[in-house]
Image (tube, rainbow, N blue to C red):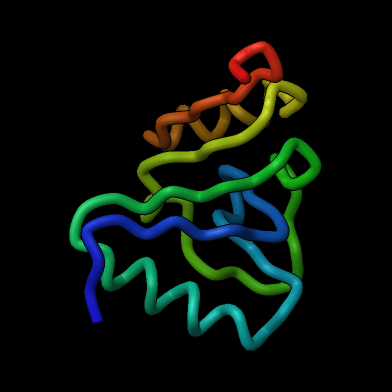
Amino acid sequence: MYAKKAFVGCSGISAEAGMTTEIFNEVSINEMMIDHANQDVYVLADHTKIGSNSSFTSCPIEKIQYLITDEKAPEEALNAIREKGVRVYQVHKSDF
């Protein structure tokens, strides 16, 4: 199965390790979703996951086009992710 866009969650995301998870069985599912996205890959991660690395890598940062996070995400980690070519969108409470 293929999709135009993939939206995936994670346990951690960083410029160095990419998208990571704590659950080994999620790696193959995440890899398949990302590899079968015809257009874009979006990672959804709250501020506690930004700049963090978990046990297992689901994909390198180069496979991610977009990161959606909240206003509390650490700017230094976001800048490192941006430097890898990922477009970062931060959601603010005032947006609702």
